[in-house]
Image 1 (cartoon, rainbow, N blue to C red):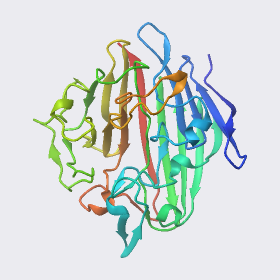
Image 2: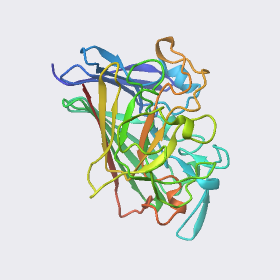
Image 3: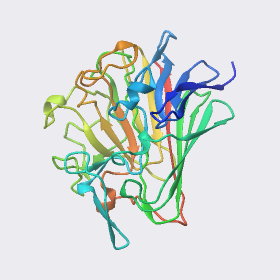
Image 4: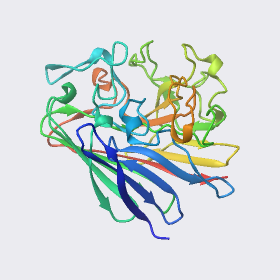
Length: 346
């Protein structure tokens, strides 16, 4: 079998603009479906230990459901992922104001972030698509015209690789990630999935999930995933309601290349994933705010903890914490990050 990309119509926007869906198939029969609306990964079919393919990501059957609003299922998040405190930041002496859309904070690019934009698409060799979008100067309050490409590839090594590139004509801030919700069992909750994170530390945050600026060890806390642990095994030790993880972890790394970030294993199906990234952090989110209000693909109702996210990223609110890795992008620079999800069974 040869790796292929097959385009098809997915629907249309309210103004009649066509939206496409691209089906990527690798040489082993793994399938990823991605739409150019928000570059949303709508389906990802990988085998279990018996060789049976199953869809392991949350989402909807059609475009109309995505257009009605959703908690960032499968999309590219930008211009700046995660939270910016009070929707404000200062850059080169100028203060910028962003939309407040998450308590007192700005979240995931604002009211109409990259997840709600229509991207252009170019088919590449093999099972790969390059998505492109130009974010205008001042869009959602951010300075600079930002040109972004996201290349999504389903390799014959059973990897879903996501490669991000961005350039700007004016100094700005950028932090891109993918917000896929995974469930390796394909149904039920993810509490029994075993997770290991290559992260000895994390960024403590206040009640609004804004980092304090500290970096502290995970040892002795319910955030210690340095050894494989069931995701839900320590929920009772977490504070806040609804219980679950929504924490940024600092990835152990020795250089600037791809670094091991996480390993996930689902015991019943045998599905496993190894995650690597060039980013400095990863946000573990366990679908705490899913509440049964959304009905997804195949009529499945998404209850609390129906999926987990591993959002490779720069740290939340980095622009307001100068000790954190910088999210500033200047015209003479190129933003580039890669994240690779490698699937297997055991």
